[in-house]
Image 1: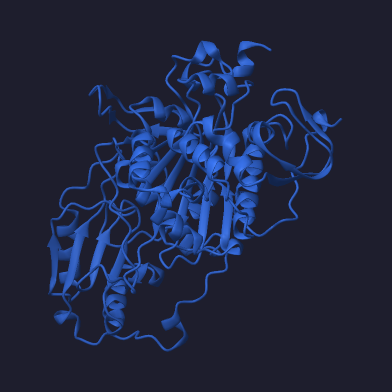
Image 2 (image 1 turned 90 degrees about the vertical axis):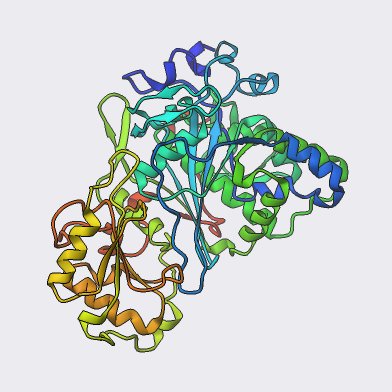
Length: 510
């Protein structure tokens, strides 16, 4: 076994060649909070002990942060959680499972990154993975403990964790995707074995006999139930699946996560008190969360929220990507933009969203007041993690609306940050007024939203419209123009698909 097999020789992902080393999966599942909280009735003092096990860190270390998602008409707000896997070897157990003793002092990388989007109405979950070698602009981040300032740089996205912690990875995601992140959950691989055992193993499938000497995975063709370290072997396998890259491994992770959720939904019992205590200890010790999720009670409430989503409405996908020079992958133009836009607009990746209830009846399309009497609040949301806001933008557009007859348009100087330009209205009867404003500036009807978070017709100028007085025809979220589901290049997998099998790399068939 060579040092590269364990991850040595690649200083923070800087190598210009594609890395051939083995990565131990730093695993995360939608059901994690359900598993670690099975001991919630064990008493106050034990829960306080588990709270002490949890690592806590700052949510976002960047200078600029996106505003949180607006609530829908019913007052419900979507939730975006960044799930991170750290390759930390800071503990003896992690070194035993992951090797690379020489890497023990190296700052960890975030090789597994998945965004879990829970819809506002809690009817569906969409999960989007980003390959670890994705070329990304990492914004300036400040380490909250040492106060060291890491300047803005371009590198593989997994190195963002080394720029002060998970809060810098959150800042990088917001810049890359335009999606506001509400929470993060980061795990190292010390608790993976215990979790797989606690549910009695997880069913997986391969389309041929597979043996990957790098990960030690050996399975016969067809379905198997993996437990303990064998589950870890499945999750860390790269060379044995697909083309031997991280892309195939991401799909294997998605299959595993879906299967784990199906196990729990089917009524898998976690009834052994001793086993559950060990599991709770292992999971909480392996877990770092943002301060907003920094207690067992909050994780328990999150788990109950996630339980409401039926398995068939869980969709796992990978950011559409393409290879680039220097050992990078980059977002695939249009397809990646479309995927992120669907998340930003709270549209399910499975394409199964029902039309809103009020869409079944005629909706107001005509203004109920003369344009000169429609109050319009204009806000400047053009700033981002990498770009300062365009000074005076709200004033420019409010003046333009005034010239077009909207005499009640006013500029609101409250700081705002948003990827897509939108017009929101609070009551159904004001939809026609909002549409009239949209028409005046060339904004598509799909950008007009019913939201309980505003008091009147509100125009937020996003970072997609940084100049000019008419909304650019080629701007806006691609998801508004294309089919409202994940593109084929996202390799989407539904949570209830129990027939899926991993394609084995021909070089690893035995």
